[in-house]
Length: 431
Image 1 (cartoon, rainbow, N blue to C red):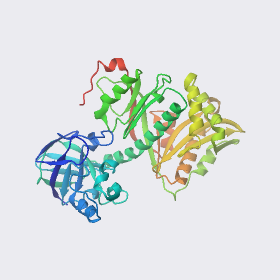
Image 2 (tube, helix red, strand yellow):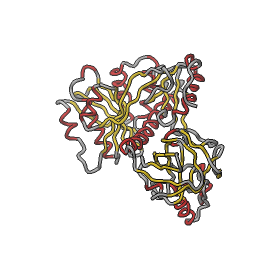
Image 3 (tube, helix red, strand yellow):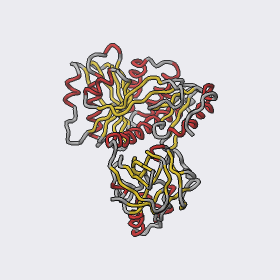
Image 4 (cartoon, rainbow, N blue to C red):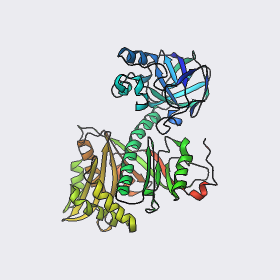
């Protein structure tokens, strides 16, 4: 299924991207090309966008005013059904350039003008799997020109490509969960400054100094925006932490290294209810709470975690806002009617995220954590999730429990402290 480049397209931002005679393709994409929304497009994993003329013609046949470059693809191709290529598939273009398919490109409002009634979902891979644009990363930099041949090569590492797609799903749900928590604190009157755009989410709080309320998510996909992340804490006047899988700048020191775990689940598989029951000793029960029990739930969390001061008050305010809200499921473990453990499950996009969990010191060692994991898996399956994900500190009991219950480690990351004073003296290595 080899083909060729039909058109090379760039723009200073937005659409349409217009044809050029040639362009150099580097780690972050084509020279001369920019994105109006660079937290949604761009970065090393989305350096180049591709769309086949075959897909464009099918969409045109449905009456949409789409054309080469009008939906923002950098390379319009011919001879290849791009959306059918598995992530990790490589494209050898011309004499030197080598790309690797990374993920489908989700449609957005920016390209609505290329569709009748603005229906850009016509090129969503979810509804029209043959007609989606595809993103690619640059493996070997090089020049591209119209007429260049394209040779389709098998993946060099299919497992890594699949892991990247899985992480995209988990990262998106994690970002939604964290932003919801930050906004709940801000709505309660706490000084939490939130910036949320595309794949990048940032929070800073002079009032609540822990990393929970002073962190950046999105570095894995957008390492090219590290300076923007550091500038955010500079403007806020408070230190923060960037969640990243590699040091964001020379000399950055990792803190609290953690592992992202995932487990695939299916509706027809056992729901682990039996495991949850077996893991609990006599007198222990797990129940799903409603908003009336929000303070009981939060009371266990703050006591078990040692949270004090303004952050303790913030967590009570957060609990009152989030318990019972869309996608939020909160579990309470009781010992003969006394609360001893809590956990949360956040469900969105068919991913079940095992969120906050805590057990009072006196109740530890009784299998409560494993029972809470099992019950949240059951709830996730009941809510039609296909992936259950969690994060745990490297070497922790939580990490051992997750592995013992069928979760596999898929990614490692850490917190990197960003001090505004040090920022002024330590440049990044990326443009």
